[in-house]
Length: 173
Image 1 (spheres, rainbow, N blue to C red):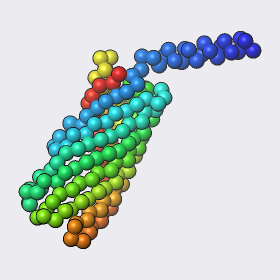
Image 2: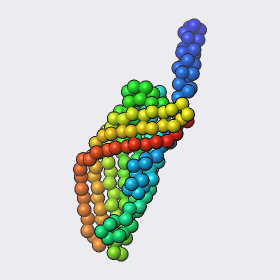
Image 3: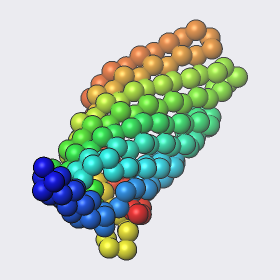
Image 4: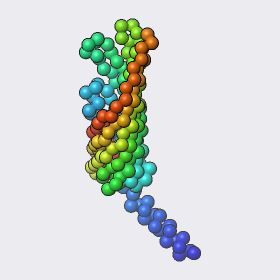
């Protein structure tokens, strides 16, 4: 029994030592969101050698060209990633993302609020340089539902399927 326990301890230490050079956290930003304009930050944590969980937050504003009204935008979400090849440091990912987007404006002195939820399965790839520089991209389909409501009582709802594209750069440690 002592041999079995010792072997298990050595195996556990070896597995821990092998993954000690792996980063535990990746912090990335989305340059594509700057075209909205919006800033989006993603923080991914390693929960296993091949599994990462990410939290997503975004904030920005858009000016409607027709009405010149400012629309405030907020985004929150999460994703789970499984690294089919490689590890948290880099490799082919399969995952799913849920994102909630909220927008509000005061168009012609009438409050208008809109919210949408998108669910996206995706495939992607992450690459981390030895310095910590990280690049990742994901492509998938988004199944979305959006609702808008004006203070005047008008409402609108839409459902659809669209593309999902994430291209992020950042740092892993």
